[in-house]
Length: 234
Length: 225
Image (cartoon, rainbow over all chains, first blue to last red; front, side, top):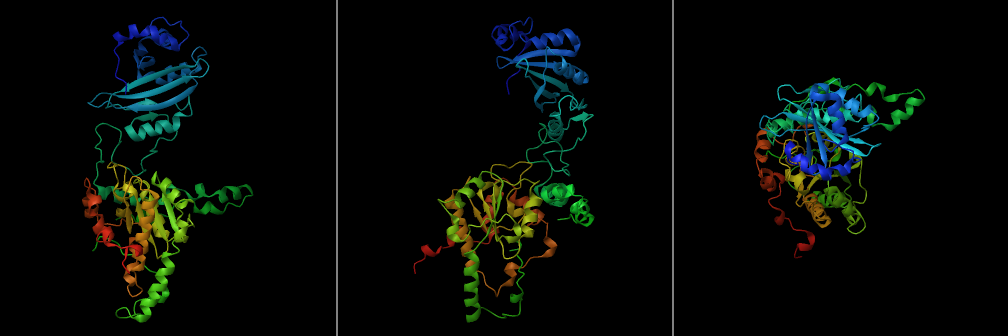
């Protein structure tokens, strides 16, 4: 991780950072940052330059969809590509940061937008409506950090098993080996019914083909058998 | 022993009672033929989850060519497989899949844990990783390395051959499989906790595998005839 560069240091850096934009930068060295400040005012908390030319904008989390939507739809910005959506936990009780890494294909411009969430209020609006790519990325952030995305169509774990109850592994307060003992972890892992996770219909190419002529053979196999889900004790 | 789950046998011809008592001339000759046939036509079930699988593919390719040992037919269905080669790290999310594949393999069957991660979790002593697949399924041979070279895997396969050579029809308990244990962990919870201590599993495997030590198993070429 790049260290956090203070706002004060940003001014001397500004000269060489202009190369990213079209040279018309005024205050911040990044045209989008200036435009954001002008339009949203106090909703733009502060701005950093990291690693020489990477501009990071901190916004208030309550207005993330409004600000990101403007960045996407405004023709002078046109950040139409969500490169990445992730989160960072710096530990020590500091707030979690939700990171939106944006890329504007039209202007060939990059911008990192961060929203800080205090540990006792880990909720933010989903941006799936803006970029469909955010769907699985937000699920991953929810899985790994426990941040809830309001309005997400299908917010559930994506990497860890569905019955995982030890918490959110990428949080700094999460112990490396997990919270449960290895025996309990093994028991819980084996308690998962394979049929519940891997739906036979999903795996069967034949079933998809047969659906076209109306003879769906595997329709009855879709719900998992209850007696298998019950036999979970090690 | 108690740690290792003994494997089941489904052959009708060898129910206990047919060959009572110790091995006799007939049974040892029959053992020899059966074991010869089994070990020279092992069909591997490749359970490749990581970089070890690349080495396993190299072992199957022309230079190392495990077809020399009758293993050219990689069986991508567990129902036609004899030897499960778990090559790579296994997550807890993958554990029920591994167990299911093992349960689906018919007897007689053997398993190789290929590489450090499959054998003991390797460097991944973390929340998401199975600390050695022998907590999930019974393992016959552990192949160390990160990843092991194809020669290493072939040596492990030859150790499986040695193990098969030592089996006998008069000992059906070797292949006994408890239907109650289907889908369950291979070890008792306290044993899993014990082997999951740092470096735990890597130090316990000689005991768990049933081999006193790998050095004690002599390959045919090592023997002084």
